[in-house]
Length: 152
Image (tube, rainbow, N blue to C red; front, side, top):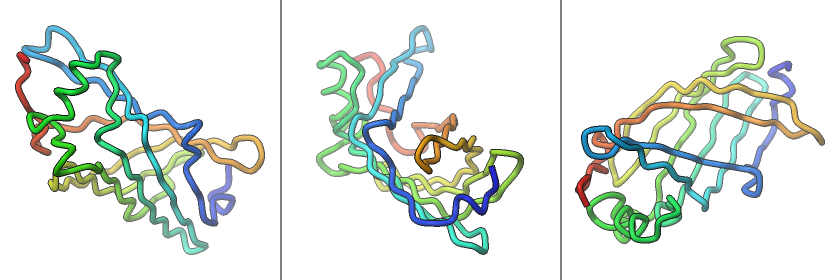
């Protein structure tokens, strides 16, 4: 895929987007797995190769399939959704690093705490002039103050 094909304004298709996570619990014996169900995003790629964008995630949309745990994750112990309703990702720039690969320089904000990351992203052509992005990364939730009571 030619990076020139990416030029333009892009909007995240929320019906075909999945933002999944997993995190170890107390002493790493088990993992909590889940998704965020309310995600919005957009990006702009221009001819000089500059890319900017944003991703907004409703922290209250965390869903592990266990209501009691989800309520706890929304509490001040973890995401504190009353004070910090959004998890935000800002795309600052992009660099083509290989065939169908780009590295995004991003700024992630959770509970008012910011961390910068370089995020390798696989880019694929999809039907109808759409583009599919796929990536996986590791974040230290404690760096964002999302460390809570792991026994609860």
